[in-house]
Length: 427
Image 1 (cartoon, one colour):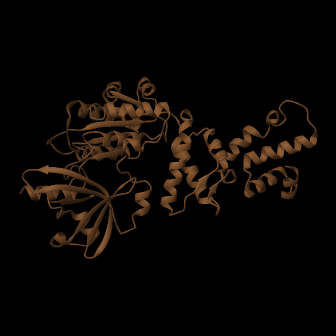
Image 2: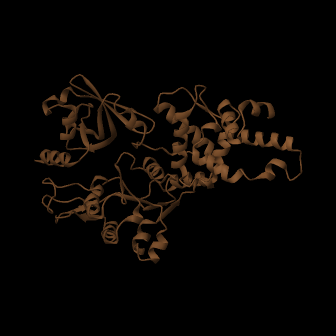
Image 3: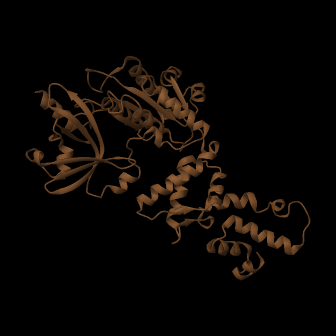
């Protein structure tokens, strides 16, 4: 009866579930897994599991019927005295071997350790110290910062540093789900709860996260009607699914994040003040990238290494003048925009594998054009000079902007309206 109940639950979950015994043998796989591997329950004893890790996501190796597969997910250690269960594997994706690589190496999250958070600036060091102090607490955390500053990275670092590290981390973007569906996504619903509901019901994110951490991203976009229910759940640590009368108890830590000014939203009656104080027990404010310029070089080098691995490239280098331009650019999109710029340049780099100013993204070039083209004082130092000397300085100024390599010189000559030979002669 109990095993049938567990199987019913596992088959309602949209992810793959594999249960291993104390000898690391597969004793159960839900419908998602059996379908992906094209196997029946009778074949489970022949399924082989191996565990490995990519830098940014957990990779589960699976072999079934002689075919190798890669799974993206996580392994949870469990201790069920009544059963011979040792580990549960939760899989977000199953692909034939090496077909998952692009997913693994890009946007699928795995464990984010504290030491993997890049930044030696005082602001980031303070945040790392704070994470260590608050990791094992059960108090709610509110992470604030502009879009692209890395709020989910911090949330996952708290999880990996905490005593809940082997329990679920479930993330949901409150802005990405229509208001009509958000409640059922968060809290689930019972069989036949409403017209169009699944016949088997649905397990919500809070129930999936039980024992671990739930990350409510973009909580500032949560509708007021749902804020009331969320507040009650956080206060009482229990809830009832839509269409059910059974109470579900919660052992959960809540981490929320937003790029909005919640205090201003409270004044405008768009966010509940009582919910704000419930989620903002421990505030963490992330700095803009322009406020931590000393971290930009380290971030750039990390992104270069990442994309070299992603695209199977040889080591790529970057000139110091490119780093300087990146450091002084006002990154309105923060780390996400910087990462985008680095990926762009990786795709345009020449055979010499060196990133130069000549392949900077157009928006960065345009920014420096707007701020530097008419700055005559920088060229003449405020003194009158001969036209010949002015021409030479202006050419050199263009070379500083576009780079001293062949491509940079060609671009500088084009911008100045002169031939390449003239540029070589007069520079």
